[in-house]
Length: 118
Image (cartoon, rainbow, N blue to C red; front, top):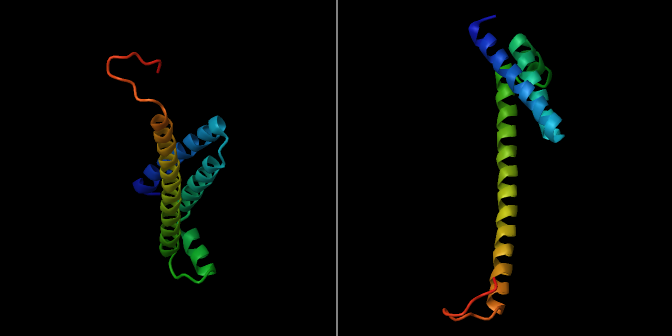
């Protein structure tokens, strides 16, 4: 094995441990998904020919192409999920601000010299 493989295997092991610790603390299945991805990365680093075998099995010529297609898919899916979450938060925030404005608009306006109970 070359230094690149040693370095990235160590990196993947650390990330795997962090994902497992995160799962133990939060019980979110996403953490298990990340842990499994880090294990897959370790296996591919230990046996690079395996990606070629998987790619050939589904009709892609090179293993690196298969990995790039998979990463592109995951990247696009992740960005779409982030966009959906952002839009949901934006809608909730807009609703909250509108409700707050309606509540404040229905309260009487106090004069500058008077004391308010708010």
